[in-house]
Length: 110
Image 1 (cartoon, helix red, strand yellow):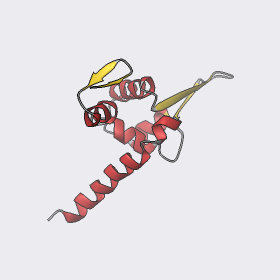
Image 2 (spheres, rainbow, N blue to C red):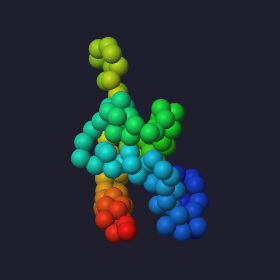
Image 3 (cartoon, helix red, strand yellow):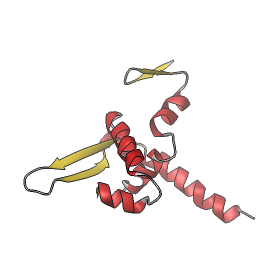
């Protein structure tokens, strides 16, 4: 049994998928690999995600320590940026492999 942030997982693969699984978490991380993005910039990268879903997925990734949210309040308008944490950056090879496999799958499609 594996425990992460108070939640138990039956195996290491289920722990990993619990953190990065789902339709949007890996996509969010993919777009944050090389850069810091504001919320609306992320929305433009993923036009089919709903605002509610993006907001919830970002919150979950932040709670799991994968994404960091930085709020700038020095002057209006409020500015919020998202980036990968150092812990989140350890997932870059996994996310990149998933993306590379997607490119491969499209090229092999007949």
